[in-house]
Amino acid sequence: MTPSALEARARIAFALTLRRRWADTLYPALRRDYDAATRERPPTTPFEAATAARTLPLYRWFAWCERGAQKMLWRAAGDAVAALPPVAARPVPIEDTAPELPAWYADWDIHLQPGGLAAPDAGRLYELGAKLVMLGANDGWEFHRLFVRTAVPKRDYRRIVDLGCGFGKSTWPLAEAFPAAEVIGVDLSRPCLERAAERAGELGLPVRLRHASCDSTGLPAASCDLVTATMLVHELPVPVLEATFAEAARLLAPGGQLRILDFQRTGEPFRDLAIEEHGARNNEPFMPPMLAADLAGMAARAGLANVRWVAFDERGAGRLPTLEWPARAEWHFPWAVLEAEKPS
Image: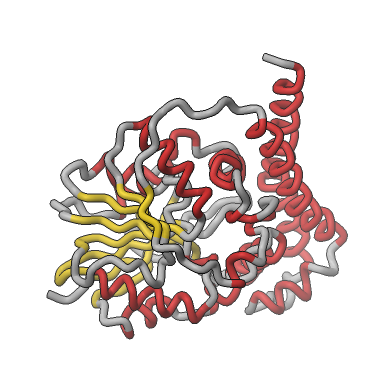
């Protein structure tokens, strides 16, 4: 291993360790200070929780470490990606609808990733960064396989559409689990799709990849039995959210299933403050409006039925039976699954 490669690996290890200590040490310590400060008058909303938390000396360190560690991770990941060898496998084709990138998408460096998801090497960079953002606990994309195993109904699907597939991390498990289905990954980022095409070629997975917007895929109506989205809806402005649910309903055949894995409020003011501020500190400006929006209502208005949220525990249990999460001391995402179906 070259000295530059060793240095890049060391920088990644440092930034990842800082992020882990932010989650398992700083967050519990801040929570203890917050609980002590609010014992007599506990806040009832994230806004009240913010007013109390921001007076605490530890808060500024918690906030700085969250954003600072994220920036360090991306810089180190960028150096590591620059040293990667070219891909030898033949990529699968990309169907290009030539979508126009909207300002809400192109004007942000989402997740603080330099250049955002439209930068030339965004796919490879996002692939490495996505593992690191999950605190290094998503090697092999077990998180996405857990979603498919526990939250997607086991049945014969003719066609599956994975909205916001990125570099393919959510599409590969679907293709592996349902080899008889035609699996289509859709994304706005051409560089991410190029990486998805390379990886699909390496893995030998016969997926289709489509460069299109999640709210206007251009695929035929009533042609899909399953529509999925993971880590997507918190990146969308509310009007685009509404349009995406309408598009999912349009794509689904009668009896078709919708499964969305993302975040929801927990009802605990401090916990909900932490996830909303995560959006602000990681250049994800649409996360707080999404958390405040009624996504189940959007799905119902789009014509879907049996709509409900259930919690998701990424540590192994996966989909849980209700919208109740196990108690945990460390900072973590409040993962949840939105379930719905197209009436027969």
